[in-house]
Length: 598
Image (cartoon, rainbow, N blue to C red; front, side, top):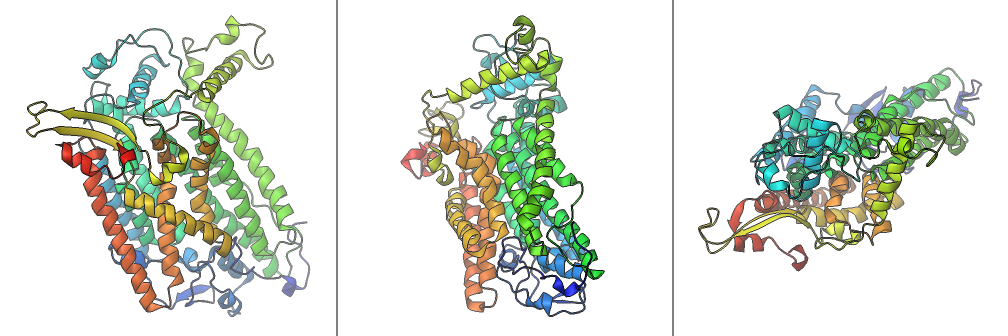
């Protein structure tokens, strides 16, 4: 049985200690729960959006005591469970009109900044940049022919000059699924063609702005703080990796947005599931029953379903979305298991396995698979697509029990798999994943130098560059913040540490298995949002740990303000080499802080 209706009511063991990783221990010292409400006896700074006071917003101490819940006899069991499972600050988030206003107005401000940095002079340079030579032209032929078509020899000069329809009627062999290219093609459709570099990059720019909005809203919910949400959005808005990828028509930005959407959906699912658990178990307890060995089912979970769709679409951009599917699914089930433990379910691990993990697998895996197949719709509908007719041309070969179209697609996937595993050709900017978090060997997307009188250069020598390097101060401090998050996960058992680390694990760790392949630092754009979230988490944790030590807290606020200001100044300094400004050669060299950056 689930929640067994039998006395005595006081047999319920009550909420678990807040040191449990499941407990959303955001009830900071000074918060007292009374009669179903929360009174915060400390200053509420979560809606202050100024640079100085933004750092004063806290999400609550991870070691906050649960005694205030126990000392409030007027609370129902449902209210006690809600406090234990979600925490007072998270329950109070958005409770006032002021907080709701700044929850969107603050995000709108950082989104506007992000839009300016990404859209201003988006057509510069007017040539195909780095791997745009593949994905932009493939996107255009998808739009025109329904499949990625071949091009004649040396097509780029003609394409850049506006002759965009010189592609051949034969299909090209491509090694990534089509969804990311369809997203690029959507920008071309909106602007009416491919003759202008704006059309190549519009979709990436809009995705980059959307990512800033999502990170700000996700951080707000994750840290139960409007101000820290705005800080997170602002950091992503000014980061170099995010800016460069938002201004080029590549696939990795498209992959990033889908896994970020999935993460946001799972955070909402976590909250919804805990509310349901509190409601259903609380109703039994309030009626005089008790929690037995097994807890209640949580019903159909739309946010988890939406996350599965997003993860399937992520795989439809690049296969590395599979790692996020695996990691996020495990994290989501862990959240379920610890929620049941906090609610007092006797055999909580077994209960989570049967009621949460198995249903999650039965929903998420087929849903993601169907979403992935949906990304191949144009391939299915195009007889001329690459290997589309393979099954008809090779009867009796391959996986015989599959329908012909799926048999052809399977063989195509085997060929793609062989390509990716055999990609070992040397490249000037290949980089071992160990150095990615420090941006040790950034990728040069574009480089031109000019002599005096050439291309308007009036100096001894000029340069234009697009270097895909994250803001060095942001990334280097975030590398330290990862260590802080690991400590908080192991020592404090803070669920937020697991959340911010999950995206880094999914986006970074798997590449160590393929270190012998030709891989690049710019792949780190996929987990850049979690780099930002980890840094903001470390700031939040530092404020929480000094909440009742005024001098220490003032020092933390000062250091955070200095750090944020420094990051902003460095972004202004680096913006020209992120966006192909023509600058003096000596100015470009000033940005090459390490020999490995050249």
